[in-house]
Amino acid sequence: MSEKPMGVDLSTLSFDIQTLSHALQGGAITPVDVVHEVLRRIDSDPHNAWIAVHDHDVLLQMAETLLAAGPEGKPLYGLPFAVKDNIDLAGLPTTAACPAYAYRPQDSAHVVQRLVEAGAIPIGKTNLDQFATGLNGTRSPYGACHNAFDPRYISGGSSSGSAVSVALGQVSFALGTDTAGSGRVPAAFNNLIGLKPTCGLLSTSGVVPACRSLDTVSIFALTAGDAHRVFGVALSFDPADPYARPAQAHGFDFGQAPTADVRMGVPLKAQLEFFGDAAYAQAFDDAVEQARSLGVQIIEVDVSPLLEAARLLYGGPWVAERYQAIREFIEAQPDAVFPITREITLEGAKPLAADAFAAQYRLKALQREAATLWQQVDVLLTPTAPTHPTIDEMLASPKARNTELGHYTNYMNLLDCAAVAVPSGFVHDLPFGVTLVAPAHQDVPLLRLAEKWQCALQGRAATLGATSQPLPQADVVPAAVPSGQVRVAVCGAHLHGQPLNWQLTQRGGRRVLCTHTAPVYKLYALDSGGAPVKRPGLVKVGPDEGGAAIEVEVWELPVQHFGSFVAGIPAPLGIGTTVLANGSTVPGFICEPDGLRGATDITAYGGWRAWLGRPQ
Picture 1 (cartoon, rainbow, N blue to C red):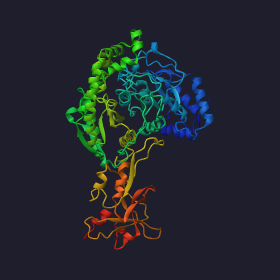
Picture 2: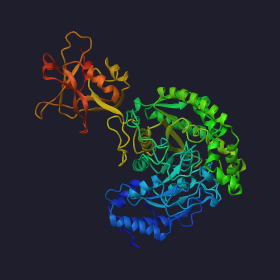
Picture 3: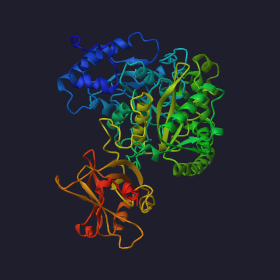
Picture 4: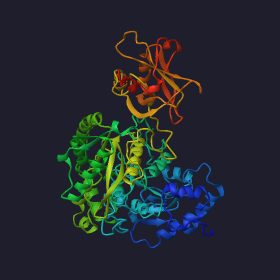
């Protein structure tokens, strides 16, 4: 056993990834110290969060092996994590919260193995609603999982133990699964970030299916930056998973854009439902006002296609997929299945094949209707859950209360959305959360926006709309998630509100940054020759030639439209490289030397708008 590290009180040390990684990477503590502290924190915990934990000697061997190898090349070095017990972890049985179903996997699930290879330490398996059927955390023979803030209340599920283990500070992050909200509802109820990635981006090889065509592995973390780091490691195309798909370009990054340019949708007031919970209704109103005060555009949108799709998940034939997932087992051993889980699953034997086709046809129509929503907004803000029942209330009405919990979550995988659940204050001393939603493959912008939201909520940023520079990102940004965009700096007639800005917007361009150049440029008003649109010339100059910082905007264009934009730029202008105030470079407008004949030096104004607005 290692000695207690000097200057670090492990008993009070936060297990968020930034804090713990700093201590580990700096040598203030070791993976061995972390293992001992994790086991101390887990010992005799009354929340029913864990089903199985690796033996002390096994964890110690993992930690010592890491210590000997060192942190180089291991972005998750020494970080403890939990694994929902429907995800395989070598060395421990997979039960899916059903002891009679248990089996011992030879290998860990693909996603678990990636995290282990990055230096993370898998502590053990966490409790869940049996066979991931439920959003409440009470449907387990290992005991109802208790909320981390008040044990009288449900933890949320089905990834109950994973959420609670992170909220209690027992691990740095945890894996769950999310088919209908199981990675988001527990996050909301336990003051966590809950990432529900785009389906197919994180492998489900080695995961006990709930609805195989809709399942995804999810991530619980204390901060959006932590979740982003774990996502960056876990992200991998797995050819052994028939539902895997490679990451696609995410397009406009609303998580980094000036917030004045972010269109945030909220449901029409009449479409909000809180099942009589006035405090939750007020909490969501407060969240909307917070977003509005931070600068985003709030746009009310019709979410009826989303709500109808949500009803299809359990009210339609998709419950047959849950039945299919454990068909042989439940038919052979029905009494081994938790009563409410058995009742719900066996309902899946009833729909006809014709019912499945009818539902698919309706879903296709709803997908087309939902697509129009994303033409109006970049991101959708909804409550994560409409209310938060106690365990007793849940047990008294298990099906009805569980259905309520999925009101804002059940549609997402059917409609191929990505989502991040984020904390948004407290209601009666219990966490309240909202969810940021966007179409598939926009996981990275969602995580960046969630990080801004979380910073603002915690008072670590005055506004979401610090437009001069983007906020710091997580240390590990998925290189495999391209933006599909090309950035271009503009300084004159293409600025927002100027006469040629349409050449950007008609090509899907969006403004992502308002800033200045490095102080090495001169700005000229070119001789227009009588043309109605005046044009600027931005010229880089030497250190003693009177250069200044010039106002510019950085816009993003879809890469497929960048060529046509450049082709339309008339001489003497063209596209070169612009150095921004922070030292970074982007493509930007340049001017050929011949174009300066007859031009007026307007550098002293600091920008095109200031020159246009000068007293005449």
